Length: 138
Image 1 (tube, helix red, strand yellow):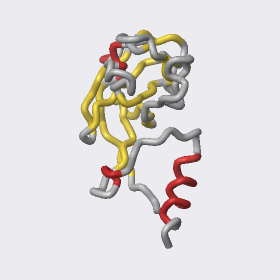
Image 2 (tube, rainbow, N blue to C red):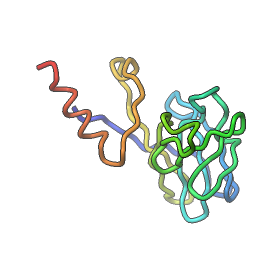
Image 3 (tube, one colour):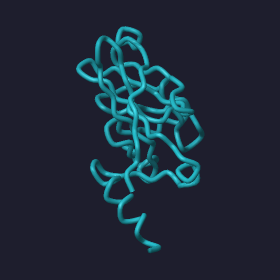
């Protein structure tokens, strides 16, 4: 099963200060977009622990620290990067800058997609999981 995706225009790069994040609503999701200087990374804006706003967190390298209880997450993989958050994850989104605008790649959701639970994947695993899970009941 192939998931359709679309690129959504977000903001000019200058609107997101260096080493900070900004929360945006896109595709019905609240997403935190971070400026790391040489690239932009994006994750779901809510910490899975107590829904802390990750866009307000402190950026350290390629991780963000939740402002409520200091859980840390990799901005590249979404995985918990500290002992407290190790078994948790946040969704990640691809980004690019094109014609002076930051864009996010978002899945085009169907009613079935909205019922599926969130799962952490290593880079490249999501496509394999989708293909194998779509044939599991056949």
